[in-house]
Length: 436
Ligand SMILES: Cc1cc2nc3c(=O)[nH]c(=O)nc-3n(C[C@H](O)[C@H](O)[C@H](O)COP(=O)(O)OP(=O)(O)OC[C@H]3O[C@@H](n4cnc5c(N)ncnc54)[C@H](O)[C@@H]3O)c2cc1C
Image (cartoon, rainbow, N blue to C red; front, top):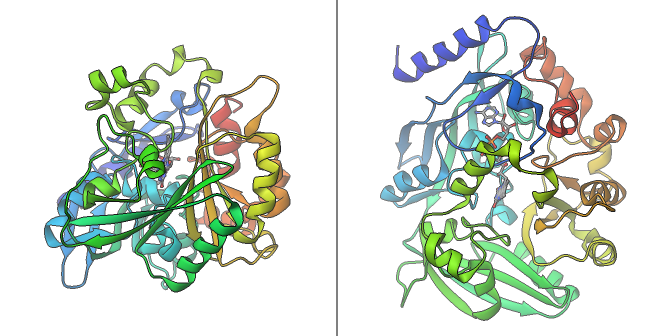
């Protein structure tokens, strides 16, 4: 039995010895990157320990394929692939997001305008069902629906234990150019042009205010006249307002937002001087997780990604300025796909080729407004989708207008008939806010 098979066997033993119908949740080695929720009832769950799943099994530089266990973090993965001059296609911005979590929770990045999410670069998953069966899932085999549905369903259909995914050639540096626009119309046109022409390798941006729109366009480079890091005193998102171009070593580019995208910790100059070097997203999330009982829920700022159909971006931002008006926003263009987990009727409302992910990170909660709920209602109107990593208030009927209930339960019946992992609606819209 290989080392990996032994780990899988231990996970199956835990699942089989779990008694009763109480739900379980996963214990990983790396910290979770869901938005901390102090009332989340999963804190009380019995755990299935998958912390051993953190080895890269194979990198094949000729086929440009990597096989790795699901708990491998992107920082460890990139350190290994870069030795072969290769990189995963989607590298989410925070160092310790795991490859399994990136599939289950829909990770994205500045190559998403070409490739979609990390899941869209994967070719095979090994998934352990609640009954302890081990299924190999590809986009073509008998488990093809599970392959697609495991994406974005937050571990409610099984445990991803191993992934096979594509790599692409990387160069030592990334050169980034910043284009500044003072109105949304020109910004939209520029995004559309680069989306259609595919003339850059990376595209994201920061909307600093309603009249300052920065588009960050990156390409790999062999050489650099200088290179900057954004892991101590410098704050990356602020630099996009000040500079016309920049060079970063490739790993520094991928993790340029690791201290926080637009909600950077520590905030003050002195704080960064003293603690900035050693405090990244991992340390902050670990601390919040450890002390979750002591943190009042209203002190955890709104952290949400909303995916807006490209044709509705103007309408959405008009509404947003009127109702919420919080900036800066991180803007990540995302190539649309007909995901099996999105209800076809909802998706066909707009039929856009491109979505814009707007990340609203760091907005202070207010007692007179529930920003999460307001955003959900607006997204329902315009055909937008949000990630479920933060607080979710959908009622069940609205939720299944967006997520595909039929596909979901077809797979759930096969992989978790006794509901050990909870169903998607319960886990994300009820358990996380302390209801069941
Ligand atoms: C402050 C903040 C900033 C963020 N910034 C970014 C960003 O810049 N780019 C980006 O793409 N994303 C970002 N995210 C979202 C992040 O990509 C997702 O939350 C992702 O799911 C985190 O992966 P993780 O490894 O930490 O998984 P976890 O947070 O541990 O788990 C997420 C969900 O996936 C499930 N899961 C985890 N591992 C497995 C597995 N092996 N098998 C089955 N289910 C599993 C868990 O049960 C859980 O429901 C951010 C999140 C936060 C809180």
